[in-house]
Image (cartoon, helix red, strand yellow):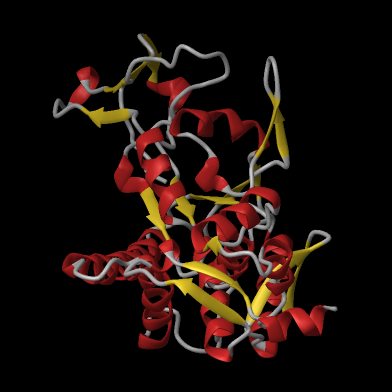
Length: 330
């Protein structure tokens, strides 16, 4: 939170005297837990707020927005993209007793995202390395903001990676005296002519974020202590996976989602991308394609899934259940 003492303030073409405004919170630090949603938030934070270089009674700050979206209930969020922190560590997967910025988490994310790499894409792995370094630098940047008592706003959903990120960051916040705002993604939104459901913030367009600010609330100290304790319990259990069941984030075994693979894969050959796409299209569980690809690879190694047509891109492979697997399902 930035506090500025000024003589007058111009905002939306209106000047406000200093004795009315006093101290003004110009923006929140926005915290998100996925690459796509963070990119959308950066686009949404298009408000350019600046302080003039003049001293004395003529000092003021102004605001300039992009073109207002034409659709009703669409808008932008004040601030700029530097106020967005992305912590895309996917803490719903793998060992969470290890340091989240360490080599284990880095190698896990690289192995997951590398599954859809074409042979010869030399720059892809370096881009993934940079992405992880961006997460770690954003975490450091967040800690600097917190030390300066900046207000933060956390955008989370019931997607497992997001709930895990939210619980983990609540544990971090116990060390700081800051105002914490949260915006939880609602299960659905009623538009003029339809009802829209979202699995995670990554499905929300940049111009739609401001419409969710009506759900914003200030997190009490008791609340983030409770969420922090939930994370402590999950770390102690340290299961291979964490999933949201009936609104609760719980530890689950590694094969928890595997039934969805068998639901969409039979002895008839299908492209792997189509199998995964059908899972994602029918089951809004907040789990990414990379997890199902990882599990399919596991069953290929076991001989339960056969490769009918191979490809340099694993998602382009044609696969089917093995006859032995089919026998076990009879």
